[in-house]
Length: 187
Image (cartoon, rainbow, N blue to C red; front, top):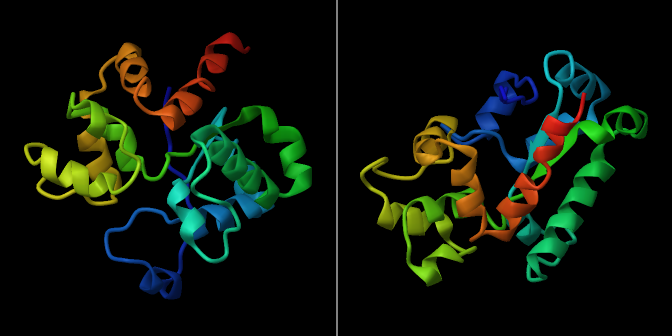
């Protein structure tokens, strides 16, 4: 599977509002999926669209979702929020080609099982960036929210079974990967 990261085009003003070396941002995800042309053009070169957003956005005052519910409920609530941001006419023809990647509470939590066997640490969903900073300094000096950093940290994933093993420790990763087998069964 080829993955092409997609984001809204940014002008100088937009870029000045974004942190240096940051990749994405949940507000940009909302913006991107709300524009008909973005959704349509995403499928010009892609068969599927993976929409990724961390659940830590629930702590933002504009998001009315309780972050303390069980992981399946939180995943479903955020998935529904993302769907509600998409234009209805576009959603009608792309809904079967959407895959939702919603880490609870951050993408770094999905990566922790690659670097520890500690039972308590494996289940962490809070402060995962700090945990990775402490336990994995051989791969990166400091975990940064950049495409290159995530690529380095996930390099230990070599085969589908590696993802299956680490998803046993993280419900939201499991919910994401459960959407993937459908890719091979379609056509």
